[in-house]
Image 1: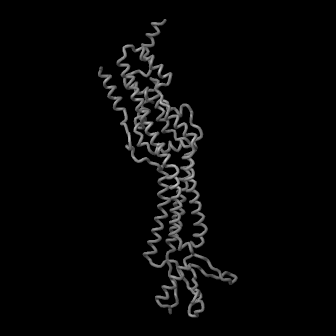
Image 2: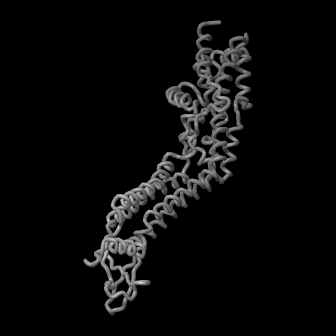
Image 3: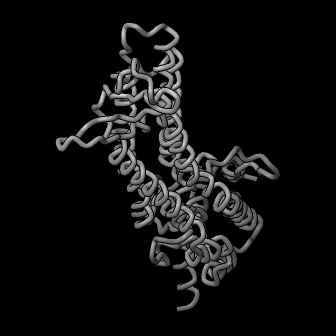
Length: 392
């Protein structure tokens, strides 16, 4: 065995990927990076504000401070604060002298509305987890495994070609068999390509993804309506008039009709309202961008794996409307590219392929590794000329 053939065998052996049978894959990323960021902010931010509201309430005591008459005792003043906070109704007279009331309940419901907002924003995540993640996980495991296996099959094919070429005595017979095999597409493994082509006719994953982001936009719009309708009406009102003449105290003459109270937690209420509007306004373009990505193909990964035999979805123009499960799978393959060991090898081969296409006709990894192993990717010219001389 010559030194060149030994070096070629070592090179091809090193190019083989390790066999990953069983649960050797790391945990797959079943959420895109932007989706995960949106989830953490949309769910975590209202929980942070809720903790801020509760912390302010526990640290400063009563959220209101009422200006009671000087003849009230400490216990009576505490009762007035508690009663006015429980009712939280502003009493006033309009221009015609009629008595009117306005409820200030958004101040009291602030922590619980934030909790409800966090739960609502987590519902699209739960929908994705239960409706799409099981099928997506199995698809990714199969496709990642098949992509690496297809690469290994191509390398083993080159090893077999090198062995046959080394053991064969007639170079003409070897190249004739090789060209015949290429014409009859023996080197192609179409299972993965056909599976991905079938995914173009499936729409379960893309429907779940669209529903997830659409629900995020819907709940964000509902948050704007809630803040605009309820919070804006009491946003600047720091003082309100509370009536104590209810129930048994209705006929008490020493109790004034109205007692002025001040909302000590108004600053927290304003900060929570403004920050909620600002944060969710920043998230809306991100969610829209996630939806817009489904309107175009992510061809970067496909262009790299075009070097595999029978993986020519791009060159054969098999891609149609991008709103289908295949486009979603491609997005998640890009997010899990660290699990694709063959991706780094094929990326290097694609970069080298661009520098050699002017001299050799290289289409697949088989052609390129054949060249690196010391074999011509097509029949050498001297053999072709020799056959022409023998058959004038």
